[in-house]
Length: 487
Image (cartoon, rainbow, N blue to C red; front, side):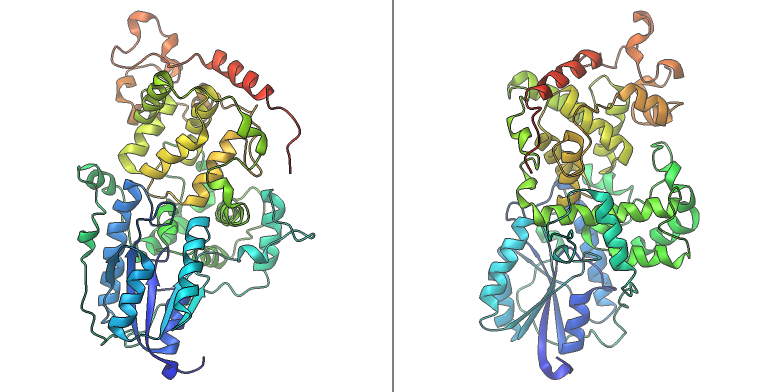
């Protein structure tokens, strides 16, 4: 369509794209409609992108408030609805007499199935336009020479870089003043607070004190990171006691900033993102890993809950009994008796985020030292992370378990003591989050059980399991399924 007269009124359904700039669905609606009606629908359907944990919902509350303010600055209003999206969209179409609905695509299986059904129904009476506002390249455009999807990151990344070199990565500009005004009247309205996104207890408020949600804040954070930190990213990203990462994952998860905006900003530094061993290259690869996660969940939808490596469906996990559940709870609370694990789990609960190096350590400990299925850990992360992206979360846990694409072999078991001694040498990270160990000498900060009994902190628990013995038990369990992987 080439003129604004194509549609008098169009609805833009905001989802995982809570921004005005680089928003293809919004851009198309402005170009093709005289008036635009923005709406966010809180869909409680299990498994969809709206079916998120308490931490992400607390973030979402503030992200929606920021988006609403941005729309008000453009003389428009973010409508808030809750319930079945098809029902809500049909009611809004009737209320506004709109003749088109726009949204940016999602790729997780539950949302994809839901969206296809909605598009099929609505297309009988109005035009439905879906766009790519999430990815650098659509999953169906990235394939191996034989047409099959990638299962290993490095060739995927090479192919993605080759495709990006042929594209103009310049993001879409934010709407100009006067292009997003709305005069259509809408009768049924909810306030953001009516969605009940904030936790009843004060945990959400204290957690969000660590963050500044919103499109403008995300843009500032990216600019600050690229100017001040990215040069040392390759080395600093593994040190949990320093702020060496961009901390943009929650904003990417809610779409307050897009992967295209990040990659364009990276390229605009003038640095070569293919030069190995540099901070820029390492950070660009992290954006590539997010794309890879979505690629996997799109092509292998069962991996949301099932292992990609079918051998692991026979893995002899610990029995689901009171002892195992108590161990899981101790892990969740950061009371395992292993300092680096406990520090990570406490950071997670306090801030809704955990340093990436520590995420790998705590995941390895749960799956391989406690023999608790990765799905239990993934569920807890989904509940407590502000950046609980379905694809990235599942990929990370399947990687840790050895059951996913390009995963760490199961027999590669992180030793949490050695990991702590290597990446938290002085114990700064542990002492910050586990103050019971504040007076423990550096030599013992990651293994306080080796202190003389009289010197061990009285208020810190003994280790849940013996690290060496549990490692041997994990390897023995793996040996029972150690047959060639079924492709």
